[in-house]
Image 1 (cartoon, rainbow, N blue to C red):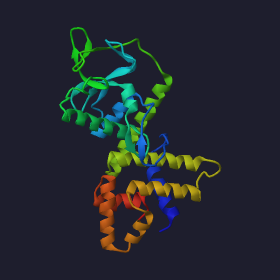
Image 2: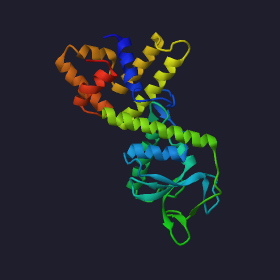
Image 3: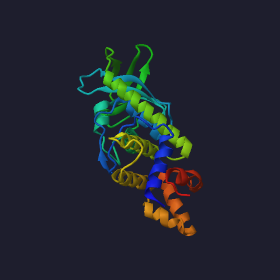
Image 4: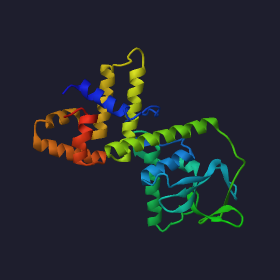
Length: 281
């Protein structure tokens, strides 16, 4: 099996899904924050993590929502599709959450937020954190048109509408990414996390193909980088895949390992993912 064939087959398969315009990112595992995430991006992450898309929505936007007490933080109110309730969240708090992943992204951030929420509920805080300083459930009052915090009792309301061109562009780009992630997840029957990694891979491939004069070829350095990315997505090395081709028992064990890592089934892996994404027949 030639590495170049493996990489180019991955390029063709991923690029065929229209994976263009995604944000590039590092791929080393570690602790990350999302210091520039918007409310819309956070909600998109929740929908992907909860698999409820598009059940959640933003009711009040960041930089447009105030609490009835003095507060230096920006808040936004959302309808939480998973919980079936309204929730006020501090944008600064969301941007401060530390999560572990291969790159900064709203999906893993949302997963960490849900883990924090579950821990709070385990301690009996069912309406947010203990003091409503980071997030809290809210109730809409139809008489005055405001949301009120279940923990703090604070009122949430819109400020004067603002328009941030850069923010709007960022949110549109994030929505485009989730459309691509959804398409990959549906096409290859893989987890949303794996689909997101493949979307990032597609963007990286496109950048590599466009740089300099290499319009249709990947350099040896590019191939080495992409090989590492594919190995991280699959959870095995290329050498392991090649060796397993000649041993049915090893192949079965390997497919179980990869399918578990990618959130799919061994049959789907054998019929589509290995031949179409990894170039292995």
